[in-house]
Length: 284
Image (tube, rainbow, N blue to C red; front, side, top):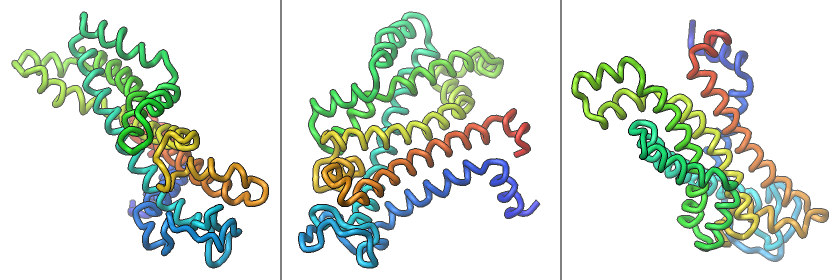
């Protein structure tokens, strides 16, 4: 079977996965090539052309300060992508460490980490924790990443703990332990590669949650400070022009929805692709 026929078969079997990949491709390429896709600066003010509707000159119109909306959308995609990747990487690293220790060592270590760390953070809504820490730390890229990572690591830790608890009882782990392998070698060589499937799926879906949380914090004025372009800040600025310039709300809302849908569809596709039983049922 040729490459194109295989690709066509997969698209027919997983149309939402194809939609997700297209949406993410637009999202990623738009952010990476923002300087070439729009020759306007996202922070350049031009009061003589404020609140213009979409036109040949400004494809997505301009905001109340005359800034090009398309340029701000493209640079906002770059900002959202960098924040989502950084937050998920930090949350996943912390979750792997804490969840791995709790699941592999068990005993009082598991009780302490699960009861007093994971359950405490999971008992509070993640977005409220992020709002509280962002308000305490103040606006800024690093502070925003820290606030979102603090609110999101516990979910990854709980998933890792559950997977490690199941994997450490398998025969290949007992065989490695009988051969004298160290705990670190057993975890990184035998356990971690076999629990990556649900972690990757959770990370892809977590990207969508981070984009939505970042937009929420920026909408509340707790995200990246102006004049940096953020989709949430764009929505906040557009509230007073909802009826006279609806494009100011429409385009950033579509951008947020498209990015979130893209990552959710990608997570579903990864789950179907990495699960052998699902692949067999779908004929992949």
